[in-house]
Image 1 (cartoon, rainbow, N blue to C red):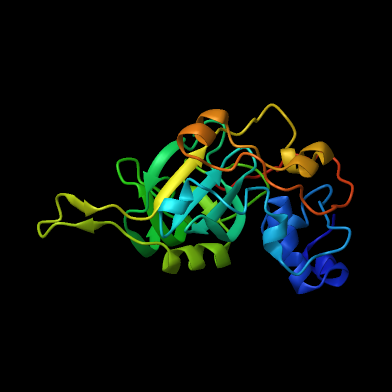
Image 2 (image 1 turned 90 degrees about the horizontal axis):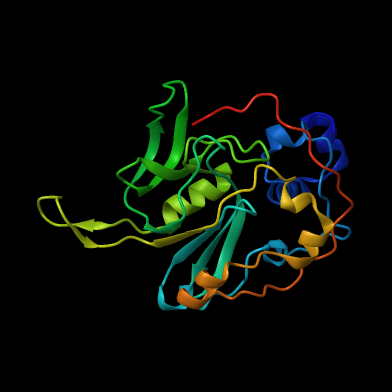
Length: 245
């Protein structure tokens, strides 16, 4: 597709930010993709492009809640069940998958050094699985799941979540959790044997349907509205190098 400079000539900054979301890739990786998902007529409201439901009855009971859908590589942040932000993610690679289930935001740090590689600095770090050291944080989004289990975010999303999310509250001796942090529902697993769903026109017209068990037990809306019209797409080529966190 060409490099960052060529993308800058073809698309204005607002559209480039939307393309990062639609293609699950940061600006540094967009130019490495063989093809791009592009809106036919870009809309000002980016929430309309979310494959996740804009309302969740499961999240309604919480002042704040996060849903992560691994098959679509997206997250949604909700306030009293209404989406206030969504964005792309890069979850665990095929050899180090991110677990599904219900978690909570625990503690945060402006920056952490990866235990996998001391050269990787994870900014706007917000832990959600203390026992395994898994967290939301800023890092490369190459257009596919590529982490060691953490959930990577765009820099602007990581900074936003770092401020928006709520930490746990510990007792005076910091041994027990008195109050859980923002709930995090992680759904499904990514299908590494198939092309990314967001490059498939049929999937783009359908959006995310959360599993029946989650819909029944958690009350998540199972039928999101179709996404706005998007440009034609082709299968993406594999990334030759995938930095790990």
